[in-house]
Image (cartoon, rainbow, N blue to C red; front, side, top):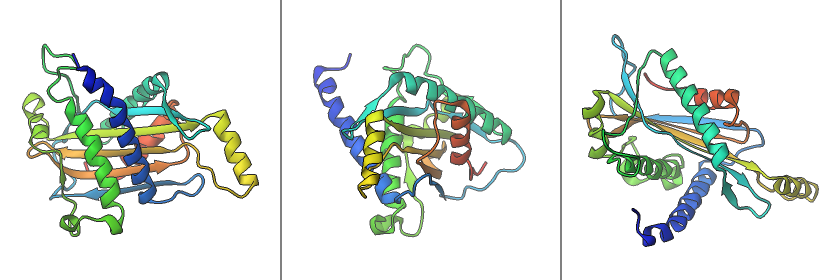
Length: 250
């Protein structure tokens, strides 16, 4: 059971992550209305495989949908998130199958639930590392000195331990955040436009990492940012998944 202190600090952690995501997206590039952008990086010696299909472990998805209120707050919506997660999961599985990958879905070790899963923190670690990549790898002004000439990021040895349970070559981690403007927010956008003031609306952000399970290094990373699309719809989830995997190397 989580301590009261842990529960008390969870909103603070969520707020810090939301701020980091907002900053990372802003730094990554200002989107024109209706614009969608993707950009990927490849690290290490990864190259498209020939012969046997790559065995890819699909990790539990990190998806959250929210409503963007008139006050500028982002309110998570559990029902929207559940539908979107199922849509994205089906889309990713279908796309990986079409690409010839041997897909394995992650399962918790026998006898453990989500709270006791020894690998559960890897999802949060991927979020943290991914937001750092968005902030530092996609903007030359914030590029870290040690990463000027190469894409060198890792989830560490804990990710490498995943291989023992599935005999997979790689693990695929996927992160999505999608927000939709409330009626009040839409009204503010319209009024702002009439008055010559730009008021932002909802935005879709996603990133995916392909992790080498020999050492935990991220060997491919892609970012998606869009002001269109709806993960709650099967077609919208399929389109977003296609964009996210548009330069998938396997």
